[in-house]
Structure formats: structure tokens, C-alpha cells
Length: 451
Ligand SMILES: *Cc1c(COP(=O)(O)O)cnc(C)c1O
Image 1 (tube, helix red, strand yellow):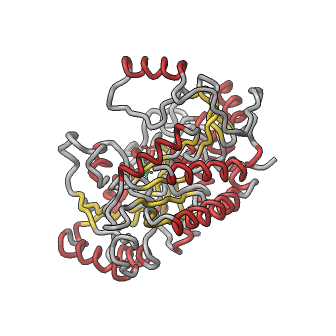
Image 2 (cartoon, rainbow, N blue to C red):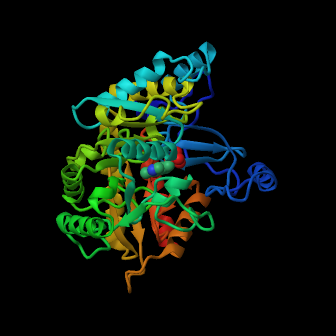
């Protein structure tokens, strides 16, 4: 069995791998749930696809009316091994029947240690590493900053333009975009500074070295290495628009951090775990981060996150300084162990590259035929198209929203992103079939042609 044919949750109904519309989206049963949602759930928790989900697997999401939508979002890069992968389902079922929780800080268990060992082995670099587990990407980022501050005895942190690191107070400060992430939620955590990014499509094509020099000059003049605990960066930005920096940009930042006793944190919450065609995207840039944060794809949909890094940095914190009631929950750990086994035994990075080999040429072909696609970029199964006004090059968020809306109406789940809201991102589960992926892209092409 390979990732591409894990369409049948163990003991569950088979899920036909097809796009099937039996009602308009949303259908009446979904609408009923959405009406109850409006009445019962905070208006702050919005959704982009107006359906009530009842099943998902392989490359489809099935709604309460029996519509089957092609999934090109994987729950924001989470269900990389597919929804309800049989091995993950079995591991979760076994663990949940064994014990659901003790709190690792009260009485530890082996499953947490297994995950830590796997992370230490799989993350870039062959130095001694240690890990700590948490519940969400934002919590991992918060802890990476705590760890870096404790280790260096310094307090300032630098994040980058277009960054996304989460929605908690410290991570809102690190995140760049105001709406919807920060507006009205201040004051934000202090001693956080923002540096310019390498954004080849929009920075006039600066080389990686030139863009890094701009960032480093800003850091040296406005923050000072003597005050700086860490810089944190997504090696390819996720919510910011799948921005791939120019070659050499990240390497120069890492080198500068090494020379200045600054901890380099790679936030691989979205890029991690086979998504980009290697286990971690840092490998593709030839960088070895001091600390790396992971979450999303780590546990087949179960909530789990981690900080992994140099043992001497991870061990600088006093006992009791890190942790949390649920961090490294045994059921989530069992899911992670099974997920990681699937990544390794089924060569998930190769599957991600194969998906990229379908996504990139098709989107470039669409770009060649339609100047409203300004840029196509990404790696593996993490690819995006940036939409612009061809006359001015200005971001076209209205077109992007219209294309996404049409795709959803036609039964294809696509997600948008970008500081300017003008990027459609493709993050399919690796369990999607080539046929379904191609059909999904046909729908995107039609949606664009009709927008
Ligand atoms: C999603 C994301 C986060 C936040 O993760 P949550 O689990 O939503 O808290 C942090 N960093 C990056 C790069 C992300 O994509």
C-alpha cells in the first residue's frame, strides 16, 4: 500500500475518489449546520469552505449533503499522509484504549520519547539534539523563543516581513499581517523587530546576498547583535504567500547568527514533514537551524507540535520551565509515530516531488496563457500562484477571491494566502491521486478563465 491509495479508513466506509456535486455548495444539510454555527460559535472563528464535513480521505472531503470535494488544502498542510490514514487510525485506536493522558510532567511515557528521538534523528544536522513537545504551532514558536532567550541571556527577537507564526500574544507580535491576525488585539509582546525579506518577485530581483545584507544592516543598526536572542523565519513563508527566498539569503542569515551568538530558528510548521519534497525544507537551502519548530503535518491530523534543536540550547532551561498539561499527549504521539513511519516507509518526500511535477508545469502553462498570474512558485506539494493586475503589477485580491469562490462552488477546495490576499496556494494531501489532482487543476483553470 502506498500513500496514494489509502482511501479507506480502517473499519469505515470506502470513500470514492471523485468530485461529485449533488447539491449547490452549501447544500441544505450543510446550511443547517452553518446556521447553527453562526448562532453558537464566535464570529471571530470564520471558515473559507461553506460545508459541514462528514468524512475525508485520500484526496476528497465529503459533506453532509453527499457532495465530494477535491481537497487541495489538506486542512492547511496538516493531513499530509491523508485523512484517516489506516496506520494512523490503528495507532490512535490502540493508544486511546490503553491510556489517554497522564501528563508527561507527572508520569512520563515512552511514546513521547519515541517522537523526540524521531525528531532528533530526522531534523537537519548531525549534532546532538533534543526536543520538547507542545500542542500547536504557535505554542512551539513561543517556546522556541523562551528557549533562545534563556540560552543567550538576551531578549530581542527579529522576525521578517510577511511572516506568520501564530495567533497567541507573542506570535501575533512576530506575525506581520494586521488583518485578520492582529487588528485590535494589541498591545503586543515587546522587543520584537521586523526585518526585510527576500521576495524575488517583488523586491526587484535582489540576490540572496543583497537581500540578506539589507536585513543584517537593519538588525545591526536598529537592534544590535548584543541584544538579540534569536531570529525566526519560515524558510518558505506559508500564510505570507509561499514566498521562496533567493538562493543564499537564508545561508547568509545563518552564518551571521553563528558569528554573533544569535539563535537561528527555522519555523517549519508549514514546510515540515515531506511537504516540500524533502523531510524539511531547510535541507533544500543547505541550512542547519539551531532550533526548528514543527506542527501541522507531524501527526496525521492530531494536535501536536515540537521544538527540536541543539542539545546545549534545549538544555539551557531549568526543570519545569517548559511543558504544559497536554503537551505531547500520548494519543497525539501515537499518531505522530505512525505518521512518521508512513513518511519513511512510503517515501513521502518522493510523492511530494511527484505532486510538484504536476502542479508547477500546469500552473506555469496557465501563467503563460494568462498575464493575471504574475508568479508561480513553491517546492513539492507546496506551490502557489500570485494574481496581479497585468497593467500595473498590483496585487489582485478580488480576482483571487473570485477564482477561489468559483473553485469551491465547483467542488474543489483551494486556500488563499498572502499579505495582499492575492495568492492561491496548493497543499494537497500526498494521498491524492494524480487524476484527482489534474481534475482539480482543470477546475482552477476554468475558474480563472471565467473570472
Ligand atoms: C500554522 C502556522 C503556525 C501556527 O500554528 P498553529 O498550530 O495554528 O498554532 C506557525 N508558524 C507557521 C509557519 C504556520 O504555518
